[in-house]
Image (cartoon, rainbow, N blue to C red; front, side):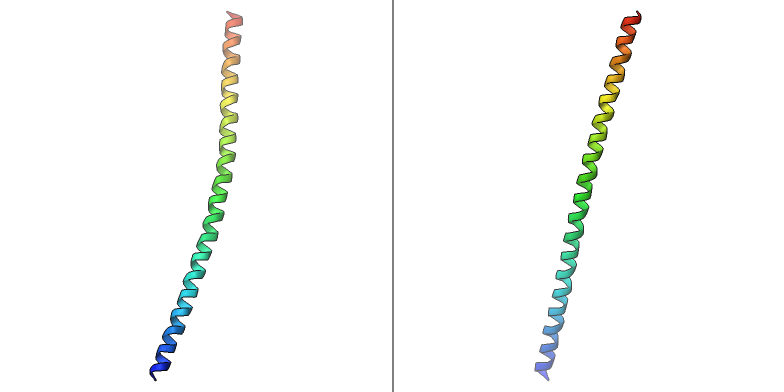
Length: 71
């Protein structure tokens, strides 16, 4: 009787450890793809911000030059 009880506990422990290991693996994979997508979207946002900044500076410079020419 005691052998069966210990055997079942070992079985439950092994199944629980496999379940926890699978959950950790899924969490690691999900976090990898989350970080990858955030990094990719940040590079797109940075590119857009740089483009917008350059456009803004060039528009202001063009306005100032036209003001100087028209003065």
